[in-house]
Amino acid sequence: MQKSTYATMLTSMTGFGKATLELENKKVSIEIKSLNSKQLDIFTRIPNLYKEKDLVLRNDIKKQLERGKVELSIFIESVGAEKETKINQPIVEAYYRQLQDLSEKLNISIDNEPLLNTIIKLPDTLKVEYQTLDENEWELIHKGAQSAIEELIQFRTQEGTALEEDIFSRIHIIEDLLSQVPQFEEDRINTIKTRINDNLNEFVEKQHIDKNRFEQEMIYYLEKFDITEEKVRLANHCKYFIETAQTHESIGKKLGFIAQEIGREINTLGSKANDTNLQKIVIQMKDELEKIKEQLLNVL
Image (tube, rainbow, N blue to C red; front, side, top):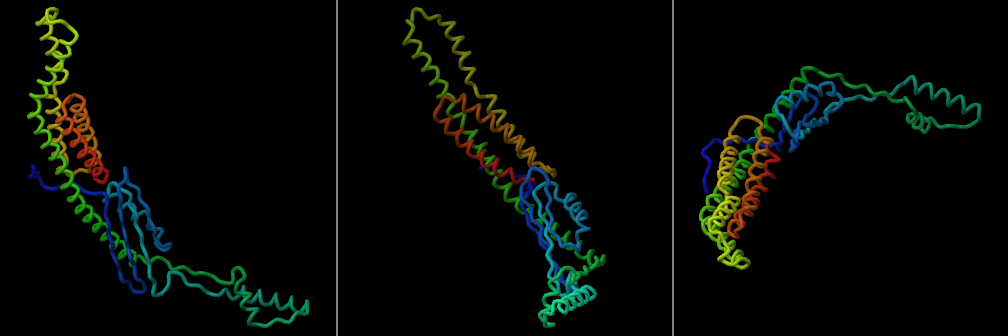
C-alpha cells in the first residue's frame, strides 16, 4: 500500500483537558471537553462566584478551539465556604416576641426550645453572605483554565494523527483499487462488442447490415462506456485530498467536499462498468469512501 511522505496535519474535534489547583481555602478542578459539531458551541458550568468571568472564558475558547461542541466546568471543594450563613437575629427576636404575645392572649403554654426550632424555619430567619471575587485567586484559576485548554488541544492533535493515518490509508486503498481497473478494461470492451454483435445478428440478417454504419455506431456506443476521464479525475481528487490535508487550516469541511467529488467519480465508474470485476472494485471503493466520510465528521 502506498504511504504518505507528508507530515501529519489533521486535528480532531474530540478532546479533553483538566487542571487542578490547590488554593488557600479551596481545591479547584477545571475540566474541558469537546465533541464534533458543525460550528463552535460553548457550554459552561461555573460557580456563581466566578459567573462574571464567564465571557472571558468563552472568548479564550473562541480564540483557540475554532469548532466543536465544547463544555467547560469548574468544580470547587471549599475548605472554607463560598457562602456564609448567619442567623438574622432581629427577625428571630421579632418572631419570638410576637409568638409570646400570642401565647399569652390565647392562654397557651409554649416551651422555648420547640419554639426556637419553629422560628428558625420561618422566612428570612437566615441570611446568606456570599464571598466576593478575589482577583488574585481568579488569575490563578484563569491560568488553570488556559492549561486545561492547552491539554485539550494536545489531545485533539494526538487524535488527529490517528484519524489521518486511518483516512489516508483508505484513500490509498481507493488509489490501489483504481490501479486494478485497466487489467479488466480490454476484456470489458470485447464483451460489450460481442454482446452487441450477438443481439444484432439475432434480429437482423447479415446481408441487411451496413458495415460502415455499424462500425460508426459501435464506436459511438463504446465511447459512452469509456471511463478514461473518470479514472483521471478520481486519481486527481485523491491526490488533491492528500495535499489539502497537509495545510495548517481548519479543513474538515473542505475535505468533506472533496470526498463528495470522489464519490461522484466512483458512482460514474459504477454506472459505466458493465463488468462484474469492475463492479466489485467500485463496491470496495464505496465502502472505503463511506468510512472516510464518517471519520471526516470529526476532523476540525
